[in-house]
Length: 165
Image (tube, rainbow, N blue to C red; front, side, top):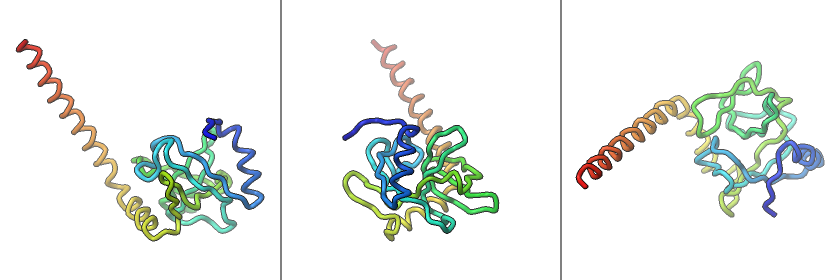
C-alpha cells in the first residue's frame, strides 16, 4: 500500500510499534540525505533507540521543535546533545537532544536491496561523508557557479540563433 500519511498521524502508531520491540519501515521524503536515500524511492527501517547514547554516524529520526520529523546523521556528540547533518546539506543542526529522538535507522532499502547500517561498505561511506562535511559548502558553490555558466552559455547560444533567423 502506497498511501501518503502525515507524520503527525503516524507518530503514535510508530511509537507503539517501537515500544513493543518492533520495526517500522518508511519511505523517505526530501533530499537532505542524498545520495544515500532518494526522495520517495528508498525506505528506511527504524527501531527503538538503544538505552545507551547513540554514536557518531548513527541515523536518528528526531522531532524538531516545530514538529517536523527529520532523519539525519550524527556527526558529533557534544555535552549539550548531538550534532546532526544531512548528507546533502552544508549546515549542521545542534543540539539534537536525546528526548527528541524517536527512532534510529537499523538499515535501509535502496530499491529492493536491503543495506544494514552494520554493513562494512555503509560504514565506510558514512565515515567518508562526515569527514567531507567541511568541503560540501565549496562543492555546492562550485555546482551553482557551473550551473550559472552553463545557463549563460546556453542563453547566449539561443540569442545568437534567434538573431540569425
